[in-house]
Image (cartoon, rainbow over all chains, first blue to last red; front, top):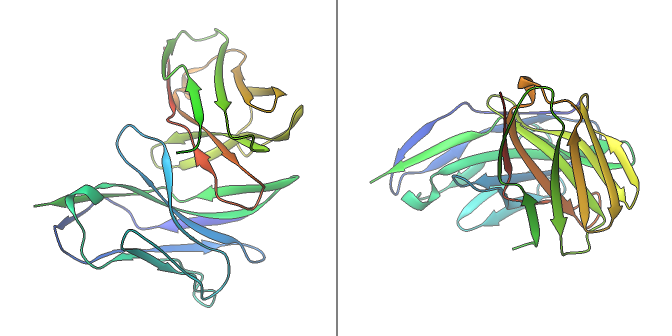
Length: 114
Length: 112
């Protein structure tokens, strides 16, 4: 079945460092890909998405490119801030029954220190 | 923010008791979902609904039932709670099946 694999955490960075969180997927067809972020005690919020190959999603300085040839959707940010500390989930939208469902990776915790 | 309210936000219950969690939306979205979040598993789909009285099972549906009698409300019931159902439960909504989902704040359920 469809699956998402993302790098283990926690990832600890200093403020202004470069961030990469790796995400690879297995899916039939051409799923849409998403990055969600979860701040402590809150639900998940959509960070960015890409719906077809070579699309780049971007938001709040974060970027991810849909790479069909490597089945990847790595999250990057050039300069992280303490406020970026959160758990990041990679997800894909796949067919399930009468509609679609989101299949999530296990999440990567990011800690940014001064 | 999407108008999604989950209740209760926290609950402790005893093994074998029935529990109902409620998800209420004010966005008139067609699709509603229940997920559970557990360490090492990410989020997993329990049940979803694609319209009033139209529901279907997700990947971890055993021990759970759902009902949707109105567009705005989606109820998740644990008929007889077990310790393995201790988790954080998230409701989500989406306009259609292929667009991004918006999530509620979550319900932390502890079964003792």
